[in-house]
Length: 591
Ligand SMILES: [Zn+2]
Image 1 (cartoon, rainbow, N blue to C red):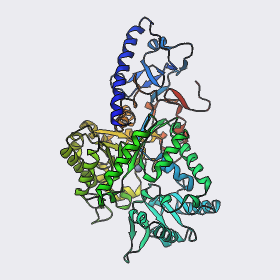
Image 2 (tube, rainbow, N blue to C red):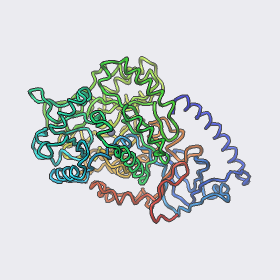
Image 3 (cartoon, rainbow, N blue to C red):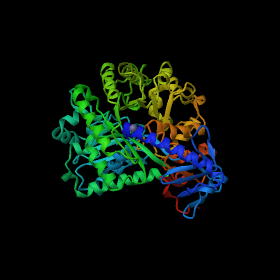
């Protein structure tokens, strides 16, 4: 939604609130003639609001909540055509707003690669890749996702090693974490020949002779369409992409996620997103797309400005309540600790002398942030290491000083390791921390790289809450499970991959607070807190009803997710509702 549109909507909503409250006064005498489309009674509904956090009944009419209160109060909204659901004490929350995930892009990519997240060792991974290659002989390349440093042998990742899996076709292997790519010799040859610029922008790792080793530490920007034509993909690939995108969005609805910030919309992918929407792909869900900016933008800031103007215009023409484009951009200051690409103040614990690196100098990032801010866009910047996060804060501060402070809500994505000296600055500058508790869960590789002292100050949720910093939650799917329950549990327990609660347990937060970060706070992170994120009269009727009281969640509920088999957790959701319409209903749900 463009800012002007947003202001108009706000004004319109204000008018609505007044009207609704006038009706509410009249409702004591049952005199308002507003009958709802959908009413849920006898519920245990957590609204995410601070004033009225729990209600018994809700009503939706014409897509928006018109009532949230007690059972008696809702009776007068029931008319002859109202669908009434007796929740029988079941829990309800607002629809989850996932602050950072990749449903459209990775959804589309899933159409052309093997999903090997579930494998547990390298042999299984290799076998899965070969099976997929044999099953898809006409694909112009072989692609798979899901390998982890944890189960790779000590063997260095090289193109020659990848050749031992498949040598006669180009092979692209994404790490489960998404950032790192590992390819074979054939892939290098084809990428360099077909699109040397795109190849360079992936920042290939080079050996002592200056030759690409086969590893890319910033593989997130890998786009097969940069190297292969539509013709090479074959006509059915596009249809498959749309199908997979739908599947991902449906999986999200199954676990109660009704709004997602897809943080990485590539320029070349925009036509696909628009076509997907036109085909009804977003009718049941909401996606906000943020435009990907490469750090190579610093080479030519004038062309960046042109690009951003185009993005803003695209947003004005294509934004509605189910697809929001044109108001935010995503860049990276650093990478991930597993491959030492986060930018740290102190060396990695298992790699003395290495502090990682930043993709932008401070000066470059300042200029970037100032341009983005001056154009009224929200900056989303990936920052995991304490030095990287500090560089982002410095850049946002610079932009605010030059352009004057406004309600920009610039974001730091992940914000895994903000240094304690910077916590207060985050709050003072109104910087929004878009965090994903799933990354706190960690693994052996992360633990070895960071060491105990840093693990103890990773994602200090309680401290950030205490100083009034603005934080929100999401999943970072496909790098972590899309199910919000996974993140809620980690935030409330601070449990790690070993099943232990050992990294600053005092930084755990309450479930109510964690749900707020995953709903109303993440709605604020996309400027839609007046429309989404809580159960409140005037907002869109997006909510989730469970067959389980989330307050009773325990560590036992987490273990299946750890195995990447979140079946038990999926079963928690009875219905998911968007715009007052049931968009997911569990088979056999008692309604
Ligand atoms: Zn991400």
